[in-house]
Image 1 (tube, rainbow, N blue to C red):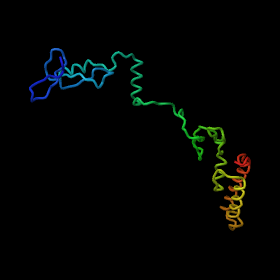
Image 2 (image 1 turned 45 degrees about the horizontal axis):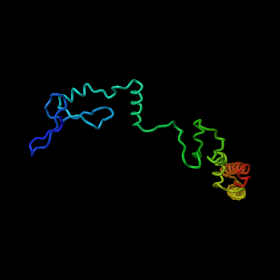
Image 3 (image 1 turned 135 degrees about the horizontal axis):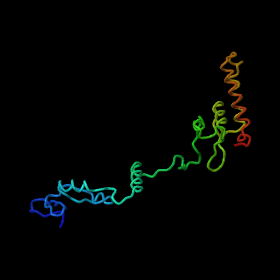
Image 4 (image 1 turned 90 degrees about the horizontal axis):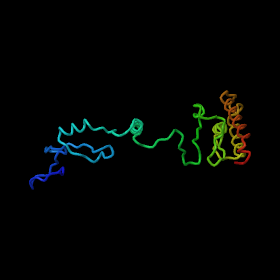
Length: 190
C-alpha cells in the first residue's frame, strides 16, 4: 500500500499513516534508521508518538561504538590531531622575537632556530643586538662596524654632556656590537 493516496482530481494527494491497519492521514515523519536519517516513514500523531517511544538511535551498537559515536559528535565529526603535529608549508618555523615559547618551557632561549632545510637562523641574542643597533638581517661585518661608529658618535656621553642615559645606551651598543662581531654567521660572510 502506498503512503500517498489519490483523492478527488481537485484535491492534493495525502499520505496515509504507515502503521498497520491505520487509515488516518500520515502528516508526521520519523526517520527509518540511524543510517537513513533523511529517509522518512509517515505516521498519524498517535502512531508517531508510539514509534518515537520505541525507536533507539543506538540500537545494534555496543558500548565502545556508542562512546566512539559520542566522541565524534563532540568535535562535529571533523578531523583532529595533537597540538603541534601539523607542520606549516613555510621554510621557517615560527619566529619568536620575545622568547615567549622559551619562557613557557617550550625551548631553550639560547638555542638557534633552524630552517627546515638545515641552515641556521639568528639566536635570540643576535636578534636583540640587531634591534639595539637598528639593523636588519642579512648584513655584513662592515655594515655592523659602520652602524656601530655612527651610534657611538651619537650616544657617547662626551657628546651628550655626560648624560647618564647616553652612557647606558652606549653600554647597550657596545654589548650588541660585541655579540654581532663574535657571530659565526657574520664571520662567514652570511
